Image (cartoon, rainbow over all chains, first blue to last red; front, side, top):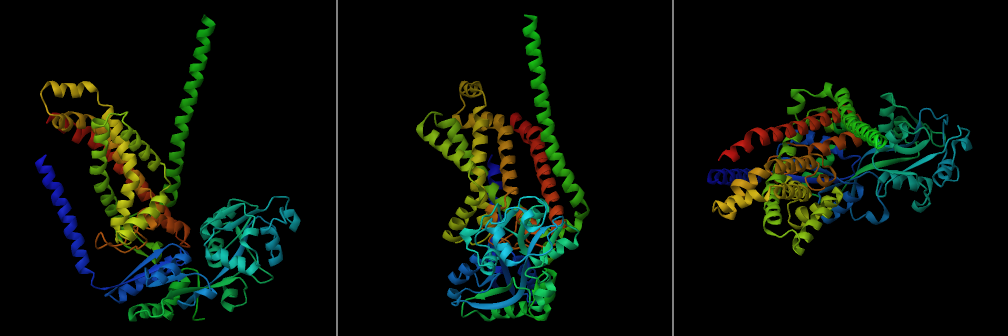
Length: 274
Length: 286
């Protein structure tokens, strides 16, 4: 019994010692980045690259949504917030650093004969004024309306573009991430939703059965987002308080550099530089 | 009367067939999940996958640092759960009369806690450990949040195990003039050990499978943790991120999920083996 207690005490002491060591080691600068789950993997990737080039800097990238990115940057809980949309009017207390673009495509199942869609039709579908695909020249099948959860930047952008009010939307299914939306559409030939164009294009190239619908006559492709004429697109931002430190600014410059552009493309977003 | 006999015989057979079918259904679900994971994930699992750090947001490289973080979070969780939970279970099973108002209240709160959705624990852990106690997003706050989740499960399992020890064992201890503590440590606890181990396995299972409670407590950082005060990404958080947010992350999500399942099976196996061959016999002998 006594030997076991000594063993436990020793173990605890080791853990304590190790924790203590960790603290004294980390005299390097620590930069905390929180926000949008859509772009957190991309910035996490950039952070690892940056850390390997700047041994004194540690970047902790956390996720939780654009709203959290804004809130944490404001309260100083994070040095940088990740926000996957444009700034609202009451958000000019923060400095917005533009990083990349992302388009949002309306998607349906590949078996759906619908070939394109316009904003009026989208509005009618999301208000349940059109309830069956037959109303659009498709098969006699109910339309499953899939919407994004409250607090998602894609929802805000979708509402702003279509002019729909949040209360008007009669959703059958509410989802979170892009991949949720894609899986829901693949599993339901009557479904319609909207997801990031880059992610949807990748899934189509992987041979998954979904279709990106041209919106108001403009094909939903990353090229058209890059060209700037695809209407439903959003800027991806990093936000900081007005007086960010040298180190923070240096990292933000890196994320906007040509070197980081290849990482942006690797995550199926569209870099700023072109 | 022979009519009734065949009736009950028919009923027996129907019940038997139904329970047989239910068992096969359960086995089938497990087999389907395992088969799906093996089919998509087996090609991705290798020694380098298990030891390398993730690259390109987890699409390349491995899960070395993720496994270390997961292990540390689990260690913190168990180091808090087992002593605290065992003491609580002993108090409730051995000292408090089972009908006492306080015992009933404690049991009810534990049952409510164990049914609570994990995101509630996540928000609580974030508010209490990360912000109020100033631990930040760290392995400490992740592990302690998991401990809060696993405690009710473990306490109830350990309490049941202690209650299942026949009263005659305790009477035997008394008859030999052993103190209550000595009876507890030498007779009752060893006899209850298999049940307590089952409780630990349940707690580990719940902890390893947890995502929602960990995103806001131990966080999302995929780097190799240097201390328990660092943020560290747990395996389940990594799988969720790869499957949901990283375009092209499906292959490594499957490989990571397969690793998690194998890890769970291994832990189960070790615990069962320890219970029956190691600890149990040694404690009984001493």
